[in-house]
Image 1 (cartoon, rainbow over the protein chains, first blue to last red):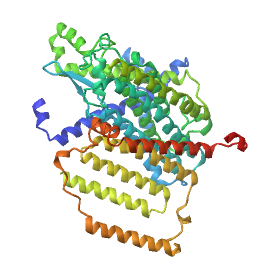
Image 2 (cartoon, rainbow over the protein chains, first blue to last red; image 1 turned 180 degrees about the vertical axis):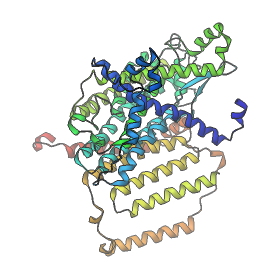
Image 3 (cartoon, rainbow over the protein chains, first blue to last red; image 1 turned 135 degrees about the vertical axis):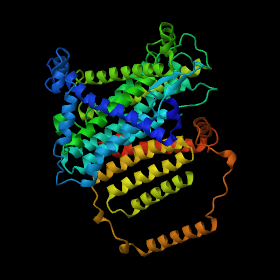
Image 4 (cartoon, rainbow over the protein chains, first blue to last red; image 1 turned 45 degrees about the vertical axis):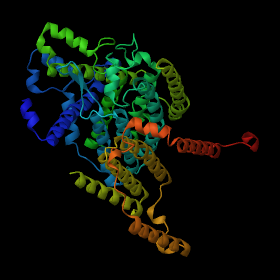
Length: 392
Length: 171
């Protein structure tokens, strides 16, 4: 099996790996749209989607009705509906850009995943090797750069629709995304100031951050820090980052580009059928990647608990059954831990949607420029001074 | 492989750059500018200068062209409102011909780049630490001047966009 894999042409290997990751991200995006409906229903105290069922599964006595009430088959029903609907193209739109916009929405959402490590395994010497499509030095800059291209889909969709509500949505989208990118970038600089201590090779990669949060951090000795997660050391950065993430993914309470209440549907008012579906899958893919980045930076990545690194857990499991220390088992375990944290964060996204009332547009701008940006600059200055004193 | 990739990306960049100039629709032109910038970022990746490539994407492709598009769409300019070439004043024509001629002459006389110093590969911009070090030592003065220019521009924008009641407020 492994022989066969290594004999493949490198390009084929890379393509297969990329496809495998997309095959995971895309269905998670679809499943999230289902989860959104179900979680909303639970929070509002109603049953939610509970009708669709595949016939031969409904014959299973207890499991069938349970799955039906859980509503998981609505993913298939919704997807099928979206595929087979008539894909109407309104007469007054700019056709080229109208069709281009949903495609442009998907590309950055699926490209950012290349720079995000999503698991790790231990090699023979006990060294932790991250699993990623491309474990590059500039991981964070790559993610920010590619995801910042996502704004074009909203601008193009709003403009090409050639009608007032979508245009307002597109204009709001571009203003909002550019406003919150600043605080987002500033909020994470303290993390990299901390891990790029003098004398270490400089990096913007996520692997180093997780390495620090695993406690196995060479170079500067900082007793007592071993295995602590960044959310405990830098809670303000984490708060700014997650707030900006809500704004960047257009989630409530920052859903200005859509604003169902006052702009009908914002930038996607004129869209229907599968093009509309692509916008939604792209939004959820953005949420998945954003949650992944937050997990890597503030929630310890693939480490199971604060102060309990993955290596310790594998050590305990290996005492139970040696097969569990096999690299593939460790890889699956770490990916499972990582995905678990990501899904918990996505639940948090949905939870906030029904907890915090949405802001008015002027409030969004005021929060972004007058509150979040000064806060992130002050946070950066405070940590820069503190880190300089500690690492002297 | 490397040569083929370079040729393809360079051709793509040039075609997009020509598209910026010849497109009458301002939205098409700004999107061609975006494609051209992405092409340049691809050339940087070919030079293994990943940092420069992604900084270019982050700053220019991600933010500045987005602002261009934003303004173009707000003003809603139509391509046909632009003056055609034969209505240009004579001075502008002479200047344009002179510039193109100067460009050709310099291309013919000094069009060859010196052989690259292989000890300096990868380039200074490739490595994060080296790049930052250069920025804060060799190029510290230009960085400071640029920062000051941006500050002045920002203050100017605030002064221009703020509605003052009377002259007393400015003082």
